[in-house]
Length: 403
View 1 (cartoon, rainbow, N blue to C red):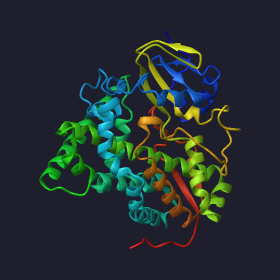
View 2: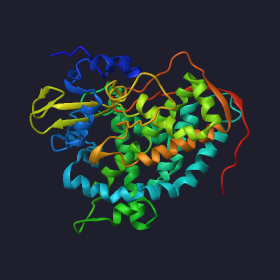
View 3: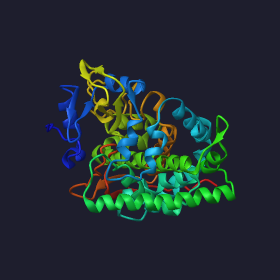
View 4: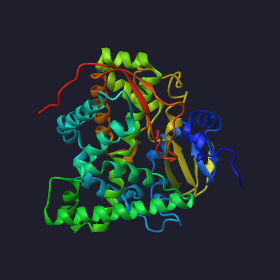
């Protein structure tokens, strides 16, 4: 059976929100091309996320190891686990992302943001993705994971390819590129694991090597699977969050001026951006038994696609949801998930976005788009522009990096 709405259509990925609005008319319905059940209302998406016993994440193993990609270490990651196994693995990395740990990163994150923002000065035209949105969060996550920050351009390719894995086989050239990326990542990360085993450092790899679960240590394969998901998860979504912030500056220069005048508005701006145009557009689960969502019966073993992007513009949850309101109060989006799978890196992403915006508003009076049309990535999970050519419309005084 062919379903009329195809969420993988490049035109939909460029601007999914009109499609989401149409889907909310029948808030639980099957969509193409794989016949998944799309859930669009805030309350229903929240319900699915809150009940892993009914909607399991273990389905990710099959999704991330499709027939065209039989070897996929990311399918063995925490992303595809539920219950006690998920809880134990999550506990091993949680301490690296506690509020105290993230706060301790603040000075270094500020220093990196300052360096990349300063490097943008004097360049009238530039690609914001390669100049700031990629290298800044890539450098942060590289330090947390103990990876070489000089590889940030490789991180970008790796993340794009990992988040593009779906049950649908892509064109041959792209499928070959994804297989090549997995082999390259595996070689590099295995070398890192071996190096930390020989010479422990203050990073997550070393922590995982010395961790125990019920008296058992993690295997190199367990650690590899964790690294395969932590790298793109700690980088990809923040890259798109920063890019979406830049687009908001360009589309709504009055908001940018307001942030420059009153930087205390930045946290609220970030929350509104996460609601209105979130990086994470969808999350997939599979039903463990027959269930009913929003008055619709879904049989056991069915794929359920929670449209996070649609939930952020649900009129039953948010007043005038299509309007971007810099001063909107009480915004609680599902951009970082909900329940036991709530994003470990939420505090880090918010910190990077806040510090990154602070660095930009201190140096630039405004920005303009230097392109007639943007090219968007095609991942159904995360969304953002592939390139973002911009022009700075005025320079302000610089701020030196902290010692």
